[in-house]
Length: 61
Image (cartoon, rainbow, N blue to C red):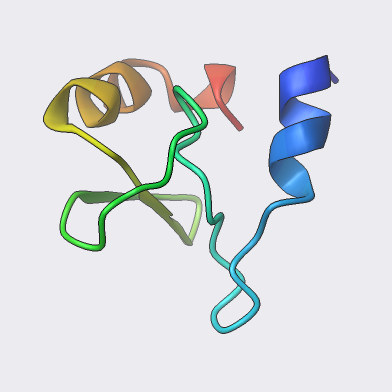
């Protein structure tokens, strides 16, 4: 597991269990740009980060 992934897994939204950081860049995501992967909703700060994630979600999870 990469250092980023271990950091990312510690930052989850306590209300619904979804990550509270953009998985691509680590910034604070918006509630409007989302993608679902393996039953988990991921939120993104921009369309660019969502496109990066959608191209290869395993790289960021």
